[in-house]
Image 1 (spheres, rainbow, N blue to C red):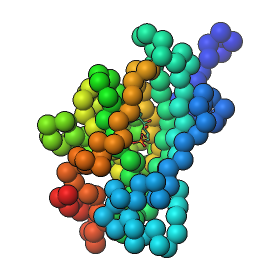
Image 2 (image 1 turned 90 degrees about the horizontal axis):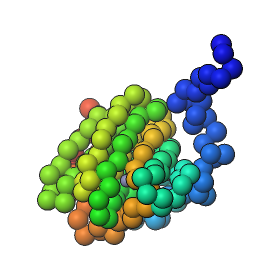
Image 3 (image 1 turned 135 degrees about the vertical axis):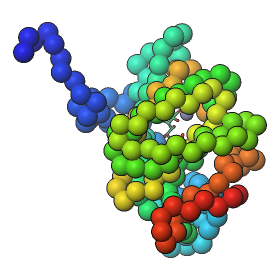
Length: 184
Ligand code: S6P
Ligand code: ZN
């Protein structure tokens, strides 16, 4: 092949994500999200554990028209019967986002500020546009680590506090036959 052509697949691009990241890796543990899970306190008595980690790449931080992107590894498992999930957040002010599934399977919860809820099945190859103003949380309902890519405009603020006032309307639990939704 002509040497000027660089055959970079998604897998190749993200193989060495720690080397590409422009920010230190961010690790979230149960102790940091305990109140978001129904039985988080009880589960924490058994010990703390890492729920997920994510890397951010911002080649031109806060420059107009630029992008930030990141890769999240969300581990499998349950916390008091609830599937492992990301903290979830809204973008403060305008700022849409694109999520793409790289590995594993789960559900993406989207909720508007008015309380409209959408649940999207996620797996390798899934791509979803998250409109500005919609909160988002990924839930790993599978048996392997779920890895997904996120792309958003650089310079936006992430609002995490809102989850403690106005969390997603549903919890995603592991039932005998699979996924069960419980109203919050
Ligand atoms: C950023 C994007 C993701 C999340 C990551 C962790 O806008 O949505 O990179 O930051 O999946 O989730 P959370 O809710 O802890 O930020
Ligand atoms: Zn986001």
